[in-house]
Length: 325
Ligand SMILES: NC(=O)C1=CN([C@@H]2O[C@H](COP(=O)(O)OP(=O)(O)OC[C@H]3O[C@@H](n4cnc5c(N)ncnc54)[C@H](O)[C@@H]3O)[C@@H](O)[C@H]2O)C=CC1
Ligand SMILES: O=C(CO)COP(=O)(O)O
Image (tube, rainbow, N blue to C red; front, top):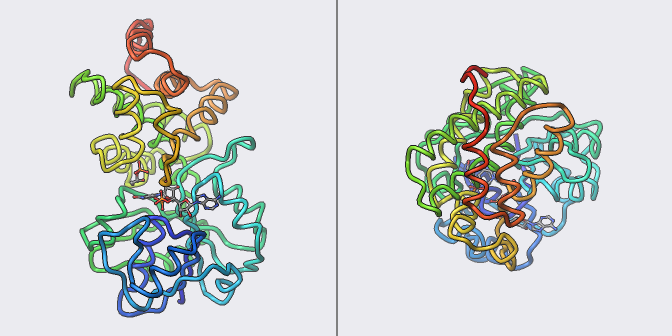
């Protein structure tokens, strides 16, 4: 199975490296000419993942049509750009493995829904889990969920993308895998705020647990399974991203917690913090569906510039309730 990758950011590059194990040829589309040049001439992605030498069997291109000849395409553009890249060419019935974590602004669609609209004939799978790109590219042990409604295709993709240090767990819960990845980015911003404002480890754990309850409520309302929310692509990724400044979302939250503005923190950055885009979309989708998501609402308020003390005070002064659900 020849693999193509859309997106030459850190995660697209790391996944290309995984797919190139055993000297398999991989073709990667990158938007930036300097990324294409750097991969083809120096076997490294200087701009987004300079820490790891890449397999010489990875070829970069600026021509999306070059990916029409592969057997499966990993879609690793940021969530807000997936529609544009998938609308630029016709992938026919080539399976698309969606690796971005977010919800599209405006439409409130998950990436899978966007992909089905842009490429109606392509079977869809989702790859998600606790996966810092630099660790995966360095060959450190990692496990992911590979969700696909077509069980046979899911197993084939899971086997093709598995590597000695990259374990893939097949699932048929596409929506659950997507929701975990999208929601955890928002919660990671909140945990970063706790860190930046020095609110302590107890507060961070409370936020992870209550945030997980929100993620699960939202997921179940959209048809996800509880076991998926508690698995690699849900709780697993939530714990990772809420614990480390290797996370761009957590780091954004640290800056907010230190009193800097989202505008300042997000200006001029080349790398993506998906949670900043997903947070208001998630808040609105939850409100429309009558799903209580106070932590996500708090993150939105912080991104909008509300003082940390006020937002935390409002969260803590909510009426006491049972923990259940
Ligand atoms: N970096 C990581 O450790 C992981 C990232 N992801 C997800 O992968 C997705 C991509 O993130 P990264 O590879 O980390 O990106 P990155 O932050 O390393 O690089 C930014 C990416 O955005 C692309 N981009 C910027 N403007 C664009 C536009 N107008 N159209 C198309 N692409 C554009 C750039 O070409 C580049 O590929 C995100 O949804 C992220 O949540 C998932 C798992 C791990
Ligand atoms: O999704 C990720 C790890 O699983 C990467 O998290 P950040 O986008 O916050 O860096």
